[in-house]
Image (tube, rainbow, N blue to C red):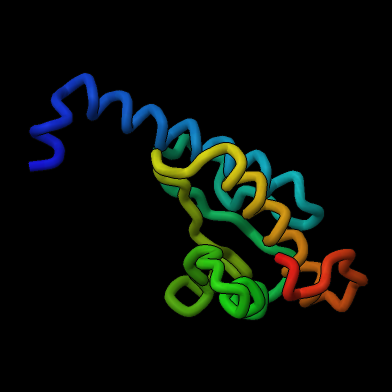
Length: 123
């Protein structure tokens, strides 16, 4: 019903926004030291990223701050190593994407034992 109400043009705009947001998210996250694209192939809505540390620990740190940081792929796809699946829907703003990138970087620093400039309760 929702897609029918949107029409072809609305659906195309939504798809374009999802794709643009996912590209922005991947670009921002890959600027974090140790984070990289796992695959160098075109994607539409989801991206697989390699983390420098165990994905489970990083995602648990984010979850402790009520942030859903992505899907840990290590259990179902152990050959991918410390990989997570992320996406950014059409509803995400540039500010939210930038904020998430900063929070992921902080979570990685905390897991690595590096000094973090923000206290955990100020996320």
